[in-house]
Every structure is written in C-alpha cells, then in structure tokens.
Image (cartoon, rainbow, N blue to C red):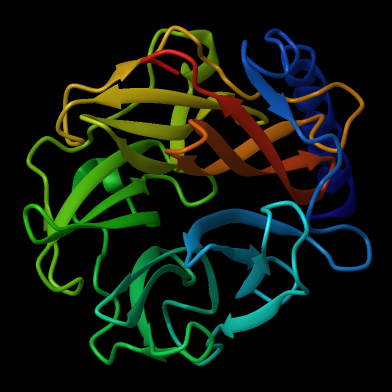
Length: 322
C-alpha cells in the first residue's frame, strides 16, 4: 500500500470514527442505580494498555486476571477492596513459536479441588482458539499438552472463539463456559459449552445463544461476557455494539443459563462518559455479587483514543431485579 492510499484510508477511518462518536453519548453513562468510580484503577501511560478483566473473590480477596496488550500476555493483580490493586504479575506468557498463541489474552479461571484452571484465548495468524493452563498457586501455570481445547467449527464461529467465561456447577457436576465467536477483531455472537473435566467440551445445539438485536445499543453485534447465577436466575453481562467503534455494557437474564435470554429494560447499564478516560467505548465486564450487601461490583475496560484501562462500577440491589 503506497503512502497516498495509507493517508486516504486514515482519513476515511477518522471520518467514520467521528460519525460513530456522535452516537456514543445517546445513552446516560450509567443506568439508574449504577455508579462509576471516577478514575481508572489499572493502566495508563506508564503501565500500558489493559483490557478484558476477569475478577473473582478468593478467600476474601479480589483476584483479577487481565490482558496486557504491550506484552501480549495475561497478568494477575490482587486487591483487598476491589479498588486498590497490586502491581501486575505475569502468569501466562505468549508463545512466539506457536501457530495459535503468539498472543494470549481474554482469560477466566476456576479454582476446583485446590487446582487453578485457567482458560484463555490464543491468537494466531488467522484464528483465535481457547486453551487451558493449570496451576497449584495461581501464579505458575502449565499449559495443557493437548491445547487448544476449543476451536471454531460452526459457520457462525467463523475463525474465532474467544473470551471464555467459565464456572463450576456443583449441582450438575459440570464446567459451564460462555464464549464469544465470529470475527477476530470484535466477535459477533455469544455461545455456550459444557464439560465434565474442563478439557473436552460439548457445544450447545442452541448456539449462538445471544446475538445482535433491533435495540440500538446492540444492533451491530455482541461480545465478551461474564455470567453469574444469583438466586434462581443467570445474569449475563455482555458487550453490546452499536457499531464497530461504539460499545456499551448490557445485561440479559435466563432461567437455565443456556437459552431463553431476555434483555433487561435497564439496558445499557454502562456507557461511555464524555471527556472521561472511557469516552469512546466500554468493553468486557466482569462482575461479582455480594449476597450480604446485595451489591454488584463490575469491572470493565474503557477506551479513549488508543488507550484502554480498567475501571469499576457498582450497583446496590434493592429489588428482585437489577
């Protein structure tokens, strides 16, 4: 591509983003009852770009596995309050000699029987796949030798499966995974799979279980999610795309966590804040529900220009619905 073509493409891209940016503030920055923590918690000029967090409470402490774009690796941060975080520590490096994980990112973890199971996205030249790594301490992980454990196979998955969100269900003795699939840059749909051992997965015949709707906030596509079971319902917090440059955080509800997902009328719950650090888009939520305080804590990555950082929003649950 010559210099003239590069300049023309750049101008076209800037025009497109300018048009899309006008619609970024069509919704309030937070839905009723939600509050944003004003400043980002992780990331910046000194530390680089962080995205797609996954947070869980382990023995009273918050542990975040998050993607670090600068090193193409997955790092861990710890916190006692969910606001103040330790310095990032790399727990899984990329493998430049691999054909499918030259970059690793978009992870989730489950601790079962004292073993840390880490599912992550491996980025190759032409595809995204999901791999598994195991650890005894949450810091030193060994890759499963049979990786990858989940690959694109259905037409709607195109050449990418990514953003695994995994929980262990004691009642049925299964690992349950929700994952995004479709385009590599930003996925198109959300899908479901289950496994007895976390290695061999059975994809649901209902896939895709969530895709774009007629609502403006997710009329283009849907992406990375976190799923919680609260009382007798599953809540899916997911990325809703209005266009390729504008995304928001939305929520849907299902009785069985597989099909019958209903978007809640409060959508979208988190949107860009004009002039703030998340002024252009908000992405990939990770959510914890405190049963005692009836409070949702939601971490997400926000983007302004080319910088992505991790922020926090919260919601006090006063009724039976979000």
